[in-house]
Length: 294
DNA sequence: CACCAGGGTACCT
DNA sequence: AGGTACCATGGT
Image 1: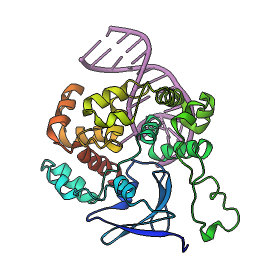
Image 2 (image 1 turned 180 degrees about the vertical axis):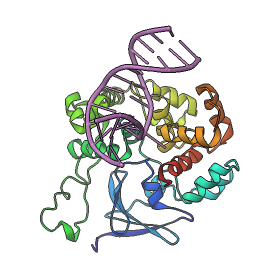
Image 3 (image 1 turned 90 degrees about the horizontal axis):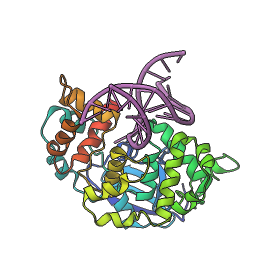
């Protein structure tokens, strides 16, 4: 990391918690280093560190616009937080991790990642995605660290690009299962084939209304409302999308409906009307709060 | 060892 | 419409 060929860039951002953002179960291949985080943005290796007034980025060849887009450093977080309903659970959640942001990820990587996420813990999702990239991705240039000197075993298979839909469509189901994704393997294959065959155009979803984009995603086998909402929120930026996983369901039951048992339909209407235009942001704060408290 | 994990599907009353 | 078994695998 003391390489002179590295370029440095400061992305100004007030109120940005890099660690909370990169470890909050949105993206699955960031690695903590001594000073910050290492990962891949738009197919390029980057190293990120938290500074007093923003995020410092180091890369071999910097693309400032791509970094700012992915990290969403230019969004006014305080303005978003002001749209939240003023209630005790959200106050506690925001207090627990002020500066938590939503990322703006690549749709294909995000879709495959969350297809693999069902009833998996975040550490296991990270391992699945790592195996997928290590076996089917392409190598990405990274500056040689001092610790790489001989054979630390890590330098050669990391980082690698996230495998394209074309590449994954060419992989057998058993090869996918070998990445420990189990019964999700045929789902990943089907998504890769749908994208490769042009039956699903991920770029064309950008212009659609949120509900229409969700309909297109849910047509894929293995993709239901929860996974679709994750992709809508973490890749496309539909900030009203509200994924309900077991943690968020626990938050809704314990914090908002303590002694009633609302029907699924009632709950859905509640989250759609109560949390406002940035409901997805509120969801991420509740998720992080439930997962990290004691 | 039970129990659970950023779910979805098929099948059952 | 509302429950339930099942899917595969590893953490706690």
